[in-house]
Image (cartoon, rainbow, N blue to C red; front, side):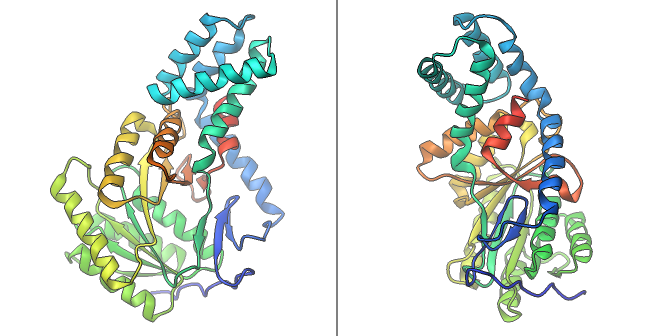
Length: 340
């Protein structure tokens, strides 16, 4: 197995964060090449959200701000899977902003809607911090088909490119293809992997964390079996893995990340709620936002997180299969991309 990438020195004495498309110590502003790469990705995000945004933006092609405009906007937000609660919240906020700004043109209302969406989504924008613990232990969950293992591979590359040493745990032992897929990502990213053919997922996770501690790795990522939250016996297995991780290292897992398919709309919110109730989520990775008509679900997730009391940040969003298609989430960028 190729050696893991040595850990990066941190300018702030330990903790580093992933923000702006790369992992770096917080004071770092990144390389000159990053803005161009980010712009290219934003073009993909805008294209990916066009199906969601087109039905919303056409509301503002008229000449009057009246009840009909707000009724059409309500219908468009619901069609975009923003959900009833988030739709009502955004409309009330928008009407307040229109009144305060004394707006008279529908296009001005569109700009104010961008502001309202960005403000609702802002608590979801938070960098993923690495380095407060060694290793930082991440448990990654999600249903089959959401892109969980692929997202782990892409996240591993983000970390490895920033000089963080990563060890992967192939704890999805129910599906042989998942173990093989994770092995391919480990080879591609030149990181180590702990894997057992037909092994117990909790035991694989335990061994990986102990190995990560002994080898002084910066990050250990456990890939768990994909499952539906309605499969209660399998959800219990996830709880067992979480308890085992806590036994392997005090305070772990430090991150419990759910990978959700943004194309599933309100079902994505249902998954977030169910996995949070079972495991206590600390963050989300939202995939497959390319070509979706249901991108408004992030507004529903944001409102749920507000009512939860503590936000569950969206660390990354994905708009394609390529490595660079997984990038950090920015609330205003998303709102602007959504409305073109």
